[in-house]
Each structure stands twice: as structure tokens, then as C-alpha cells.
Length: 435
Image (cartoon, rainbow, N blue to C red; front, side, top):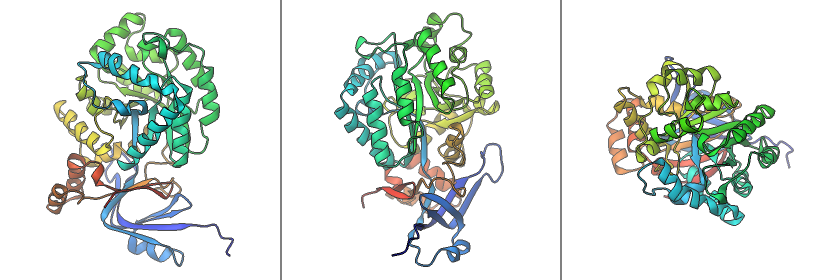
């Protein structure tokens, strides 16, 4: 038996990935109509034209034939809540009553590790079914929920980030934590950079944390500078008014987080609807990132995010499903709603830009360019196979398209989980659509 541990696999399809933001650079994407993706030991070895690369393959290399399909990097979802899987689609007139009536009672159950593991398993399988290979995930206040999430993720060898929610006021007693963050520190030491896991320090949002807890979170972020920070900001008008009453000495809701040392690269802020010009500038200046969550913003009536304003200051922007206020695990459906929100705000999102935001744009927002997000040599081989003929309507529309932009636009506006033919993580197939 050979001692050669080299494992090379190849996939033939149309290839799409990005090396720059289409909003600011010409020729920001690479498109190979008849392409070949070559993977070695879970990483990208090469990506390009089939006819140029096929002769470089070692003899006997298996080539999976996906001709007629499009291979892209796996989608990256930068804001969602795995414990809210079972309450997706719950009715409420606004964010705050939705939290009170559905979110908090649902999250109470995650002290039970068996329940937490069951939901985590379903949640991750649903992400993979929708082509999402990396996500920045909120757990609950319970350490058990974090362990369940990362254990299920490790079993699938996924590049996932998540963390224990922090709340020490304005929440039910059964979910109330303290400003002592030793549990979070223990979880960081256990999970951050353990395999493909990444840890996120996770204050839910300023109203449910005392100044002492936000200060402790900032200290923890300084002690572990490669961790992520994730929270919510400026989602609804009522929420903004509430924060103003709780933190009257701060100029704005976003500035509360800056004051406590929670704005830096690897900090992800969900929503950002009601930011003013100074807030957008602060976001750009600190290297923090925005997760635009259009399906949840429309569902709760929170408002319309201004992607053009974010672009004007060169802030990092990505897309989040925000399950369970978000109404779909599908990043294609999230693109659909992001496009409509942009139109209502007077701007336009081309399909290429939306696919960038869901891949390399999100990787850049998470400071993971070079690790995931495109097919540069050496990146982790997380990729998906998109089927432009997944439904009769998609097949009819894409048959009449005459450009890549039209095909991608049809996938974004008409596609959902059915358009995901297969999902791969670190070169291994982790989902295949039922035939």
C-alpha cells in the first residue's frame, strides 16, 4: 500500500468566485464557463478553465461532473440564532413583544443539553441544505447550548462561529446572567480555534446588559483579541429609544458599544437600520462590520437598511438570515429581500454584488479572507453546487437568459433550498439534494 496521503479530487462545472467587491472594482469576479475546481486534502489546489487544468491532475484523479451547474464558495451567514429554529414564523407586532412572548420562553429550554443538541443538529443540517457553510451564530445564556452547537459543528467539520449570549437585566429571571464572564472565558478556551470552531463574545444587545456586563465583555475582548464580538444595534425605533433611556450619556446606541471597547475588527453588528452619519463613519473607522438582515427587518417592520450609505463610507457589509425573526434559512431568499430593500431605499443591488456579499464580502467582514470565501489556492474547500434548473420556473427563466448577471439574478430572486444541488465542507460532501 502506498504511503502517499495526498488526496486530490476535481469538480467540473461553471465556476464563480470573487477577488474584489464588484461595487468598487471592475472585473471583480472570476467566471469559468467550463471550469475545474481541484481540491487537495480539504483545500483548494486550483480553480480555472477545465481545458487548462485537466492535464495537471494526477493520474486517476476522480472528476465529479456537475456540468450545467454553477460551483461557488459556500454561503456565509453573519447573523442568526440557532435556538430560535423552532419559533421561526412566530407572529408579533414589533421586536420587543416578539422577544418577550416567543424568544425568551423558547431559549429557556436550552439548559437541557439533549434538547440543545437536537436543535443544533437540525439547525446545522438546515444550513447545509441551503448552501450555508459558515455562520456567525447566537446560542443562549446556557453553556450547554454552546457546547451542543460546537459539538454538532465539529462532527460535520464546519467552519462555524458562535457564542454564549450575555444578559444580566431586562430579561426573565430564568435567563438572567451576571457580569462575571468566567463561563464565557471557559468556553473561549475550550472552543476558539479548536478545529474549525471560532468563538464570539455575545452580549445580546445593550438593553439586556448592565454597564458592568458590557465593560466585562470589552475586557474579555481585549484579553482574547482574535475572538469575535456579535450583538444587535439600531434595529427598531422603540429599541433605540429604550437604549437612550438606559445609557443617556452616550451619543448614540452604537457609541455605547464603542464606549465599552466592543468595536473593532471581528465585531459584527446586526441590523444597523437607524444609524446616523456619525455612526456609519464610526463603523468604518473601527473596522467593525454590519450584518444586513432584510427578511427579519421586513417581518418585524423594523425599517429599511441603507446599503448605499454604508458603501459611501466603505463599511464592511454582509448578509444575515437572522433566523428566527428572519423567515428563511436560504441566503438566496435573503438576497431576494435585500434587493427589494435596496430598491425601496432608492439604490440597486446587482446579482453579482449580492453573491459577493454572501461569499467573499462576508469573509472579509469576518476577517477570514484567505481562509474561506473564494477559490484562491490554499483556501478551505467549502463550496456549493447551484442548479439553475432546480425548478420548472428557474429552468424556463435561465434558459432565456443571455448573461451571467441574468442567471444569478434569477437564482437570487426565484431560488431557495431546491437550487442547492450539493454542499461541501473542507472538500467533503455534507449535503446532496434528494433527486
